Image 1 (cartoon, one colour):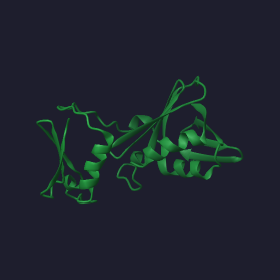
Image 2: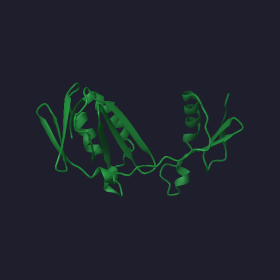
Image 3: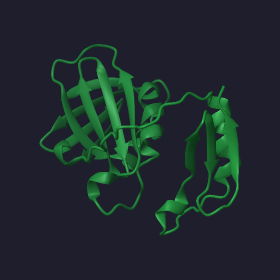
Image 4: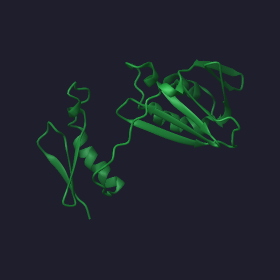
Length: 184
């Protein structure tokens, strides 16, 4: 697998995907980002087994050798940030290592097999609704302050969305109030 991409095109989706990857993981593969190369598109995937983020980047030209590999997310982000704006980055995968080159800089990163990267399964939803982005953000902002941050009781670390009779109710499980939204 070999391809080139501009630093600026790669950095934004890489930052987003690496944001879900935690520094200390129980499984080493979870500290990596999955890079899948097909045609003229590079897909970047990061997960913590609860949340999975996928970012896609169009390459300037199709590649002849598609493939997939996992690389340490934080190290790759740090490398990309350290490179000058507008620089071109070449990735080469050989013998379980990824070589990242840009200008006179050269970095070698160890990889883990892509087949070991966990896939978060998509559940079948029972409800479907539409809400404007600004309204949903307002609902989350009005309730997020009450969420626990790292409680061992995992159900306290989120918010509950309840849809009833064209009304979306957002609340925090351990907090006895809610923020209603009437769907129009």
